[in-house]
Length: 154
Image (cartoon, rainbow, N blue to C red; front, side, top):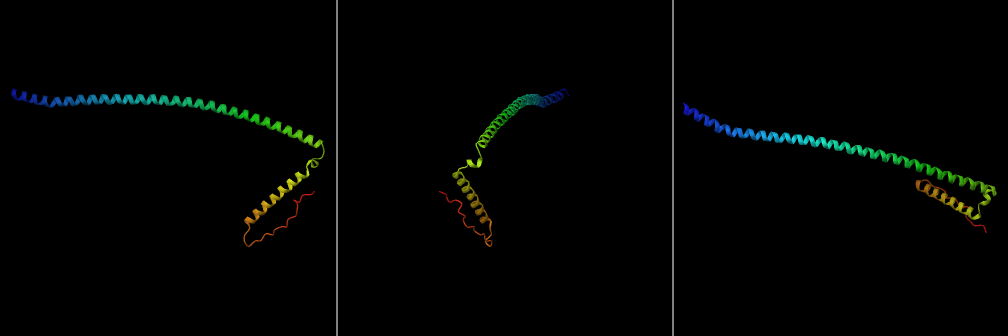
C-alpha cells in the first residue's frame, strides 16, 4: 500500500507541477493586464486634463480676439462716420459756394448739356434693345424716327 501511495503521490506531483506553472503564468498575465488597465486609465485621465486645459486656453484666446475685433469694428465705425461727416461738410460748403455764385443751371456749359443728352440717348437705346429682345415674333415694335438731339449747335 505504501508503494501504491507513493506512486499516487508522484503521479499527483507530476500532474500538479504543470498546473502550478500555468497558475503562475495566469497570475503573471493577470498582473500584467491589470497594470495595462491602470496605465490606460492614467493616460486617459492625463489626456482629458490636457484637452480641458487646451480648450480653456483656446477659449481665452478666442474671447480676447473677439474683444479686439469688436473694438477694431467700433474704431472703424467712428473713423468712417468722421470721414462721412467731413465729406458732407465739404459738400454743404460747395453747395453754398456754388449757390451763392448764381444759378446752378448757369454753371452747366453747352458741352455738359451735350454729354447729358448723349447719356440719355444711350439709356433710351439700351431700353429699346431690351424691349426688342423680349418681344415675340408676332409683335411689332415701331421704331421712332431720330429726333436730332445730338446735332451740335455752332
